[in-house]
Length: 112
Image (cartoon, rainbow, N blue to C red; front, side, top):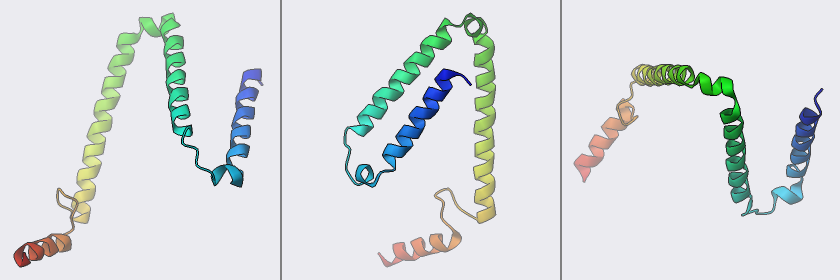
């Protein structure tokens, strides 16, 4: 097993151990969100540098971009289809209301 993998697993286990302590969970940690944001930005930057330094990735950037576009289009189409089917199966309108909720809204408007 690679030493860096063991280091990552050890850091994960340490984080789980510290985070599971009641004394840590009961306390407010307002700085934690900012620390997570900075760590995420650093991780994205390091990954970007690694990918940018890889000649294979740079040479096939057009193919990767086209594949990403095709995957995105199919994911969007599938999501729209799924939402449409679920709405029809449940009888929901564009606002996500059931027929009984629509009737209740009409009665409320009539009373007002």
